[in-house]
Length: 235
Image (cartoon, rainbow, N blue to C red; front, side, top):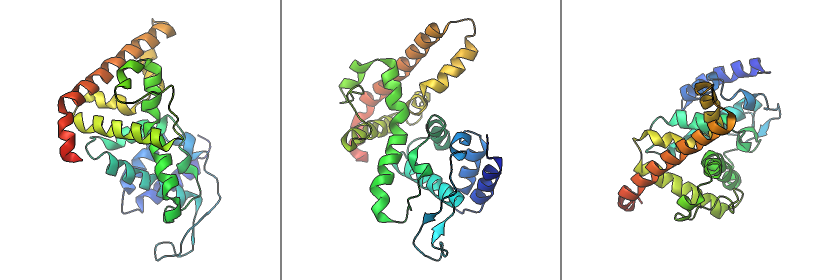
């Protein structure tokens, strides 16, 4: 990591927050956000003057903490049934660099809400979307109107389809280990598999990983089919 001082400053700033401060501290301290932290620029974010933001702007570090806190809130609100939420959020953030975490748009401006919801949804679905492409098992997901080779994460309708499917899967698999595969990214698991199966070649490891994801996707979908009537109560 290049900017160790910023990382320490962010951890101190996180602990001053009354909401999500401890969770943010743990995420930063896990080192999983190092590559994102290194990309933070010093540009300030114009903000609406309030008793909480008296100076009328957020520093770069304050903005990052604010974005991270709001993402935790957004994930909690949309996936209330998911256990170990911070682990799932770690899976989401360690495999990509979400645009909203580095943006200089103020959360308190209602005009920015469409931007934030879209970018946060993109971050949430990204790993699942890539995993479906990786498994090359399109037939399994066609029934649920998921066609990853045709979908575009910039398209709001496609995003809504993916988010709804993930929510439904989460509600019907809330206590199942396989739910990890909804949020973890195959690239991260590929590195773990490479350490476990040191005597196997890359292609064989990819085949094992593909079979592993397909198996857990089958489990998730099977549970969904068994319990989907319960979703009518939730909706």
